[in-house]
Length: 207
Image (cartoon, rainbow, N blue to C red):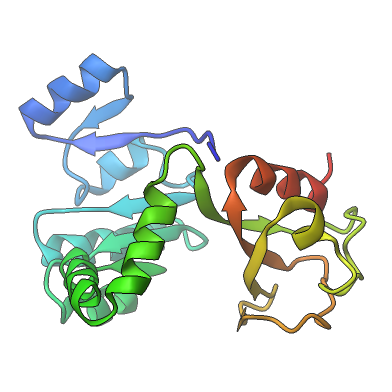
């Protein structure tokens, strides 16, 4: 499922800037720890910020500054050191990703749970089937609002699996009961073929 979003990259390395120019990606030549550079990039109107800097100290400073400039911003930050996740969260990061921890767990699972890893890897890497996981918000206009999962023919018509539900309050419900009643403001986390995920998104949020 492809999603379009306006993107601005803040970068100072010449080689990367050359690549951005070649690919036509809009960028600002500068340092993300500079407040004026963030302002020039449109931080006050931005919906989200991805922080991937060379040091965790710079990432923490950037998160602090961005949160101050835009309190409602969704901030995803990369942590290089495992102990930096807590500091980035305290600085205002909404989500923290640690590539080394993620890769380490993935490598461990190939040994400890090889059959499960093989299934998931095969499903998500199969370009012909195009299996994905997506979060689809439920609007008040959806005919499924007020229906239970048992009543909603999501599995029967679209062949999708509902893995979880994020409620408007932020509460996460994993493996929800078939009797769970879908509510406006919920986000359904589903897995299946891309085309059917797009159909579900339109079903849940009709225009």
